[in-house]
Image (cartoon, rainbow, N blue to C red; front, side, top):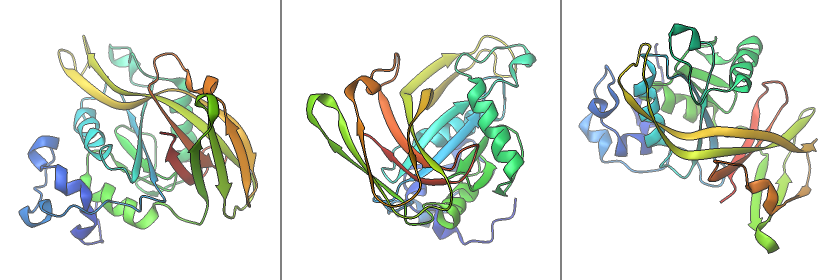
Length: 256
């Protein structure tokens, strides 16, 4: 893939990554590794969704990259394992049909960059897609397509373990606020298929998601009860403001 933007877009990513760690084909210039700014503004986090599979031999480098990206507080990184490689001899233990459906919806709508249904694919704010192991393309996609518009999510602790959520900004058409429940780290020993015999670590693996509010722009306050943050197996939660049906992501933020 050709990336026209200069490599300075790597920013915080290259501060914690080396090409050897990721198994990338391109080297990372040593001069860039010393730079530590965040990839995006902390007050407007960017959503990165990695469509991956335990049955995909090309995916482990992308899973490793996602693990490093997740250390950046300006990014909301979500692993979305898909189901369509289960036919290769190993059923993905983390895959969800909803992840496959979302990736298909993105492909139908069309993404900038490398569109289509494939793994590993990393999607930036529902706007841009690229091969999830290509660090330079990922950072360029964040710089060009991340945190577009003025929509914002603000979260403040409330009594009894809940949170007060405030939405603001402008919207074109309908949008929805979605709560994502994830597990921060899952290590999987893969028994068969293309990755048979390997142990792969997955970061911020999606366990459940549900719509908690509709939004049409402007200010709106939403109460997030403590009970909503008790999904079995989940230990972290994110809020995503997005157009429905695989539409553009308007804003994203970790709850805590």
